[in-house]
Length: 361
Ligand code: IPM
Ligand code: MG
Image 1 (cartoon, rainbow, N blue to C red):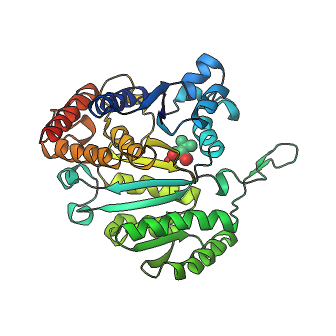
Image 2: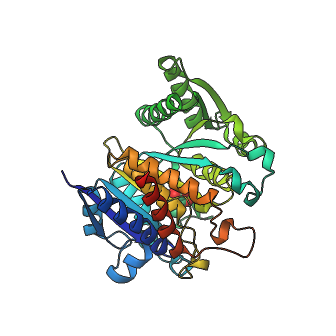
């Protein structure tokens, strides 16, 4: 059956990096006669300008009907003052919620050749390979009640951090299973010393550990994890965290790897449907200059092939091609240590050349 792929470039460098990923996808579709249909639509500020909404109804409907969504990035300062429902970020939050993409996989790994691009000392980050499993459809991002009250003095605003048992179990299950496939270590992160919701999270995750005797489970307070990620990141294999803590910790982890421009992510629901996006944002400061690093988006395409499109071998070939690309010394501006760097549009053709060679071998 035809697999449906929806490409949502969004704003800023989202446009440039998704077109690089599309070139790689187009090549693989021809090389392997893949039965994929590919559709493009607008989201974010771009969709707001053209259609009055960051997530138009037809885009949401198409997303729901797709097997994999390749999402570029959204947002730029010109839309910062829009009311809540029109902000570009609502596209992302809306898709996550409406498709129930509760499991966000954010790998953070280092290509050792790029260690000098990281702000952290080489010996600390060498061989870095962590997976952050972030809960993505609950917690304080979506908890009710929430709001701003201006009818009382002083004015106030509030949000609710809430998780039920089922939400904790389903994300912890993803994390335990990921640890089983990796190095067998899981660290669950919360603030059980302060928050009821965290204490509850810890008790549920502890309770589940008996079903995974092959996984070594630990618990850590989020502030400590933030520090430990910088001091000794190689103590981690898989980290599981709530929506808010996972958001913060995954930015720290991404930075360790030298450039946030290298890291992909997957957001999955309980079917094989998923949304795939680079960890970086829309980078309005460099948008349209043809200097963004499209590797994170190309690696996100690999995750889509693996998790939603049943093409794990092709995913592995892309990952290997990226390794070869780096080993061959190719660098975009964000990871270059001299003045020699590739433009965005030069990356996909080089990746394709590597793929052509590997298929010939
Ligand atoms: C992320 C981003 C989003 C989030 C924003 C853009 C809404 O920071 O995907 O990490 O907070 O989840
Ligand atoms: Mg974030």
